[in-house]
Amino acid sequence: MCSSRVVVRITTVVSNGCDPDPRVLREAKWLVEAGHDVTIHAFDRSENLPKVQQYAGIKIVRHRVGITPYGSYFRTLIGLQKFRKSVAKEIQDSDVLLCHDADTLHLVNKFTGPTVFDMHDLHHTWVLMKNPSSILRRIISNRMKNSMLKRAKKTTKVITSSSGFSDWLSNYQIHSIPIENRPINNGPIDCNCAFTVGYFGRIREPRSFELLFESVQRIEQQCRPKILIAGEGTSSVEVHKLIGQYSDLEIEFRGPFTESDLPNLMKEITLMYAMYPPERGNIREGAIPAKMFEAAAFGRPSIVNFDTPMGELCENENLGQAISWGDIDGLSKAIMSLKDTQVFLQKDAQLEREKFLKLFSEIKI
Image (tube, rainbow, N blue to C red; front, side, top):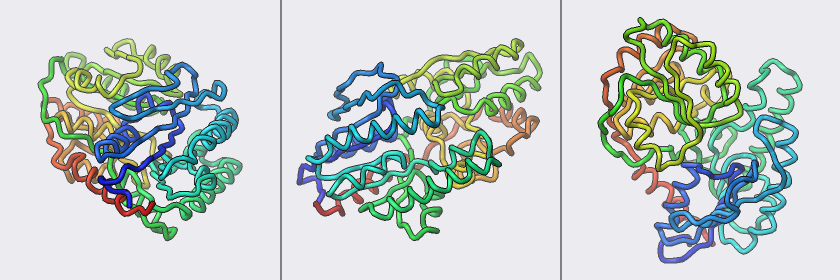
């Protein structure tokens, strides 16, 4: 049995560089704290990260199989195949395999021991983002979904990042436990800045930023907040160009950041922006952006999508406001109304940690 009295060798696999991946690292730290041996196998797509790294007792091994930029479907597909093949050679000495997200789930067929699937999002919906009406994209998306469901049913345990995703899986007779991306509650911290709206995370959907910029533009100039964006992603260049079209706004765009940078970043903002195009199936089905929880852990409110599971959670726990997508005036008013607001994250990582370790204690080695 996988318990704190037995050292279990756990291999975790994630298809990004884990530089950082807060969810992956958080779960790995919980396992190390429980006395287990954890190795993370990550995909160094840009081949610019340390090949081997130690972090909080966790060993991170990064695989290089050729430059594989985000955003290119076919190059990503080939890169992932090479990555999984490389990882498959190194997992057989492990006691448990933990696959993060659907693009690593293929490895359950290469491993003879117990496996855990951690579903972060609805992976198959991403292919629809650029053109939801495309018949070809719908066919590819449906095949990806069916492949994921088939492999998920083979795993020993399934966890998800939200109750919405667990409900979605239950429609296909797959039982799962939601482990939300809640951090430790740090309590409100003082703001050392003027009125500022922040966005910290992956830069993927330019429309989200366009909506934010237009909303701030409608606020009287003497009252407008600054906008601080930190992160990187497939749309970084496009968002940089978009910023140039809003020369009347004060917008600062920084690069990638680490988990240790968050406290200082949070001191520089008044509230967090976390709205996404509704075509992104994850949002409708249950995605809960970690940035909302992270902001609340430092006392910062968030603005999120209305009529979504994250919107309901946000308002039920008094973590901010939910606004309809495309409601520019509503977003402007929400930004102003949250200017001097502090929130408190009543449910933090402790309960999620207990659920996660309980699940692993039930696995028979």
